[in-house]
Image (tube, rainbow, N blue to C red):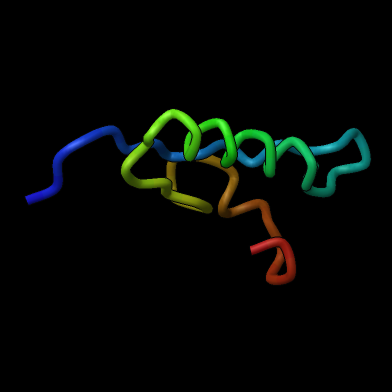
Length: 56
């Protein structure tokens, strides 16, 4: 059974509509540094349906 903190990430975007890769890196690092047990990326809680194949 899973135990611990799990987070569904947002996908930070730049004003031109692309992914803000530096902000995403900082966000993931924050969760790793703070012992988040599981990170869910590109889930159905956010912008998955608006990202193109390369952004996934």
